[in-house]
Image 1 (tube, rainbow, N blue to C red):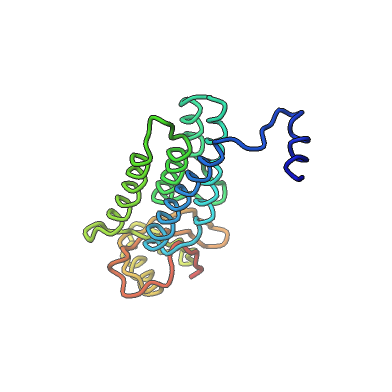
Image 2 (image 1 turned 90 degrees about the horizontal axis):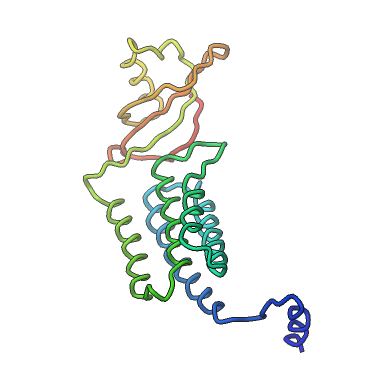
Length: 222
């Protein structure tokens, strides 16, 4: 009875209640979700330890997947897909600048969504599986290379503005290492506020050189 009612409502609108693409949607969406979950949770989060971008990665991946799959029904072609890929690929937020590594992962989750949603009869499921597996395995491999140094960053609001001079760099570095407990590789001075006598400092350090790290990418007031 419900099906008859639905048909009666949708038939004047020329909208089918079900077609063969529904099965394709479910299968490909399942593949997409499995791949992006492995990439984001088991590769990215395991190595970065930050949850700041998990929501962003999952939701952008899902939205791009559905947009591309839907537009595919209208035969808009590869140009539209590449246009969407470019738009989302250069997406930036006005709150914080996305670090290059996080931007790379954003590009990857968008690419996974595009590949899985736009694959057609010319691409077998074996090829689709191979593409997804290579992306995940290569990411995991590069993340776990022992000789690849992972440089982390912390942003600090620092009140000893008199040390923010090239001539007193060593004093500034020593004071920051004593206060933070980090072995710092380099620092970058940001905006200087002479009214409040504060300066924003980006502190960079290598994760494998630290004895213990409590967190990353957090703003501290020292």
